[in-house]
Amino acid sequence: MNQMLAKALLSSYDFECVIANHGKEALKILDEDTMEMNTDLAKFNAYYNFHRRHGSLRKELNVKKPFQAVEKWHELKHELFKITPNEFKNNILNLQSELINLHQ
Image (cartoon, rainbow, N blue to C red; front, side, top):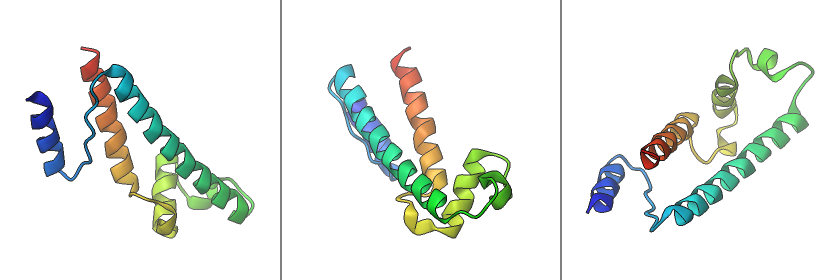
């Protein structure tokens, strides 16, 4: 019942929800998502390193924080991204809160 309620609530905000039957299965699902994020980050790094001019990323993009650099790159080359930086940030924050709730 709680799983169905949580899934309905998350779906109403257009979040994809996968229900795991136990902790090991949940960790496996999170690991798969992490691998996909690592692949996307590797593509971003490869593109940047291949196309960048002299100077650091921070200086070149005129940003102070790494997440601001990702946002800036999304503005410049949005086709490199599957989701927007804010969607990514929200997904990470939601995963973090879910993990905290699992340990309580």
